Amino acid sequence: MDCQCQETEALLRDYAAGRLTQSDRQRVELIIEDCDQCAKTLTQLQQSTATSISQPENEETNTALSLGQILTVGGLCTLYGGGIYLWLDGMLHSDEIPWAMKIGLPALFIGIGILLTSVLIQRIKAAKNDPYKDVKK
Image 1: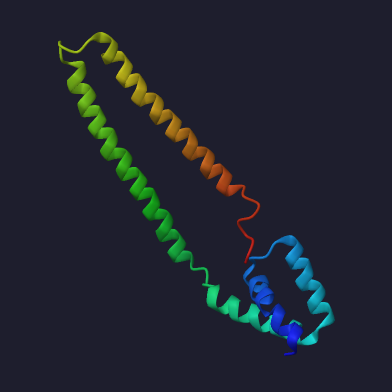
Image 2: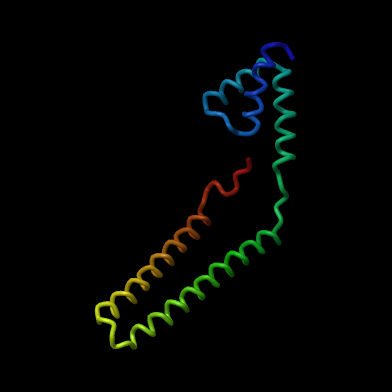
């Protein structure tokens, strides 16, 4: 490597890792067009980065992760929902609690449940329609 190539090695590493701004990427692309040694170095860096970062897609692992997430969210909803139900049931049958609280607290918890459900549905729809989900680094 000559002096100029040594100066651009840090840029080449960042380019291979995808950490450069648009102007720096264009600068590196101009450099590799002019310098064969820098182009070879970049190819080696990209290959080493790809082998160190890439993990094979395993459908069983993805299924297990999805199932784990569903079970965790479902378990938490059941646990908290059951606790809230028991608490509200005891409160609603008490004569010492004002009627405004007997109406307001259940309405609050139902509203939070509806909001949470709508946000989860939106997130699931957004994940399915994400145009960048198949983009590889």
